[in-house]
Length: 261
Image (cartoon, rainbow, N blue to C red; front, side):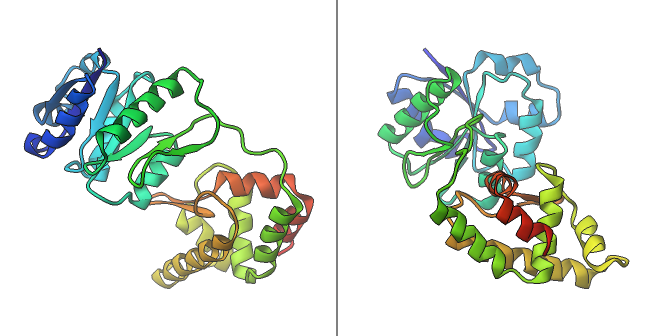
């Protein structure tokens, strides 16, 4: 039998999901105490090793989610985020960074939960690698780590990206170039502002940067990128979408447009 640990601030909020998991013959342990003790780091971390799945309740805020995740040292544990209804941009970011393995909702049916957990098990066995994400329902998204991007793109796909790059302003292109140069690294907002305006960073620069980043994201919406062209990491900065970075670096025309902008 597989063991599931649900960490929450209110065990009454987990009754529905607990019943569904038990109907699937999962052994479920739900605790608010373990959560509090883990946050205070008075709980033995070896306790987590008894479980194959860790579900982090929607009652736990994003910063606390990261605290818990950073304590988990066992890569075999599948970490699942439970949300009330909508998947936030931060949750998608955690999926992209392979911090989370899946997102579920209270609204997911027993069938959807069954398929999600089965897919997570297959993922761990490295036999479920057909695509980066598997959408199991409107609420469940499963991250697919270590999946290679397509090595080639069709002329039509490249044309989409060329069209977008041609319509970027000089400032937008410069920001994109800064992020391309950084590769998979995060670039702070202050660093970008300083390189764009070459003066001491102020609130006006930061506000202008935020709106410019939004415009860049919106322009790339017409392409077939799986996620936003630029990832926003709250409190840290920005990073280019790995898929977009891969396309630009592998296509001379795209790279030339970004570099000469």
